[in-house]
Image (cartoon, rainbow, N blue to C red; front, side, top):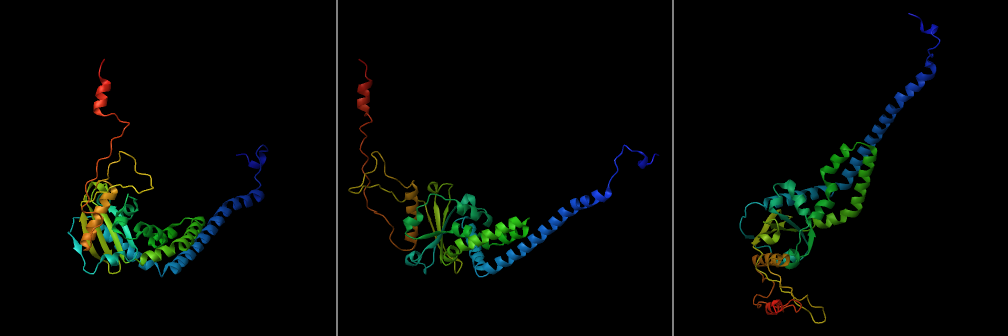
Length: 305
């Protein structure tokens, strides 16, 4: 074979020039990757330490209350167990301070894993107003306290980069500033009032109402009502524009009528008078609309020559 040095048309490789360049091309990415990994490990350890220190006093209580809410809700969607009323529970005690309130539907809850999603649904709801209690929504407690769960720690451990860890740390500090006061206040609530609709729409079937003692973690009241025992009658106030002509009174099929009927069932269970006027007369039918011709006028108009 002809030696390479005797072939002038082939360029000679200048290894002294290219070897350092090839080395840098291989070594720099490896060095940069190792540096980023060390930075990520440092940030991860720092964030886990900060999370443990900042949430140590609040996380255990929050996790305990959240777990009980999920277990109590999942246990309330099964077969109806019959009415219950603890003699120590009174309406005055129930209405003395805000309660945690949630509403779910039986078709949406099959286990504790489904509770959070069902509580987050914002159904039309007048139960708290009809019952006369001030409410703090349980869904807000579940959402705003999520940074106290082990899931946040798992997200930190699985974060793939320093940028992701930095974002998680900023989110943690933001939640601590914004949500800690709300979470602490919500955890002080003694009672959980839970409404459970048996139908896919509340007005299409019975609704159960449960009252749980969050401190003792036990049920105090179970009530169930068909939701058809209240008629809501619109009225006008002097000096205020009256309702539109032709509007018929709302019945129990409305959200207000259904929920007020359910609330009255709770009131009866607690031994107090239901709200409303039990001896009210049936409202008069609305006056006919002058713009709509009567049957006699229509017949006269349609008659031939």
